[in-house]
Each structure stands twice: as C-alpha cells, then as structure tokens.
Amino acid sequence: MTLESLQFSPGAYLAPSVDWLNANFHAVFDLVTRAIEALLSAIEYGLVALPSYAVIAIATILAGIFVSPGIGIMTAVALGFCLAAGLWTASMQTVALVTVAVAISVAIAFPLGILAARHKRLEAALRPVLDIMQTVPPWVYLIPAVMISASGACRRSSLPSSTAFRRCCA
Image 1: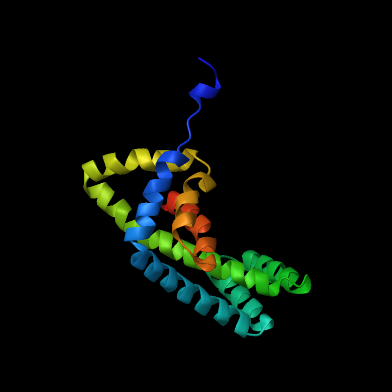
Image 2: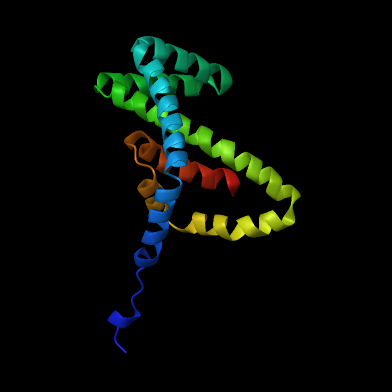
C-alpha cells in the first residue's frame, strides 16, 4: 500500500451534490442572491451618496454616545484616514458588506440558538456542526456556498456571514 492510495478527494463526492443543488434549487438561490444584492446595493448607495464628512460626523457622534467618547474620537481618526488615503468608497463598500453579512448571520443564528436552548435534540444535532465550524478555517466550508451563489455581491457576503454565524451560534 502506497501513500498515494490513501489519499481522499472529497471533491469527487461533493461535486455531484453541488451540481444537483444548482440544477434543482437554482430559482431559490437566484432569489436569495438578488435579495442580498439589493440590500447590499442600497446600503452601499446610502453610504457613498452621503458626503464623506457627514458620514464621519454621524459615525463619530453615534460611537461617542453609545460606546464612549474615546471610541468616537477613534472612529473619526479611522474614517478620516480612509478618506485621506483615497479608500473612502472601498471602505464604505466593506462596511455595507459586513453590515449585510452580520444581519444575515444574526437572522439565522439567533432563532437557531433559542430553539437549540429549548430543544435538547436540536442542540445535540447542531453542536457537532458548530464545533467543526469553530475549528475548520472559514474558507474550507465556504467553497460550496461560493459555488452555489452565482453573483459577485452574494459571494462577497458569504465569508463574513459564515464567520459571524459561527460567533453568534457558538
């Protein structure tokens, strides 16, 4: 027996499953992709359409009121740096992306967490999955999600969603 004969390639087994999902649930995936893209585009437009100084002022005031004045100052410095470095649009796209990803994660994880707390069998079923999600790097289980979603915007929100989902459920 050689080392080459012991190699295991999960792609040979997973590819037909992904193909089947794409063939049979394309309409569902397309609907979810369009909804995510619409929400992401709306948030991006709202952040980029406002003058940068207004966004910096609003974020600084909100951070100063709800967290602490020191965090408000840090927010102003960080956003001011993004503006000065010419990274304003990319930064606002990232903020929109993370906002959508966290919203999706919370919408899925909170109800699952509440149900798992009330139903021990559901917790027993979710626990091994969540344990694996905690230990495996995000890009490993992200690959099937990227293959299923056909759009760039939906793909961009997959990694932050999966990471935030792990944090909410665990």
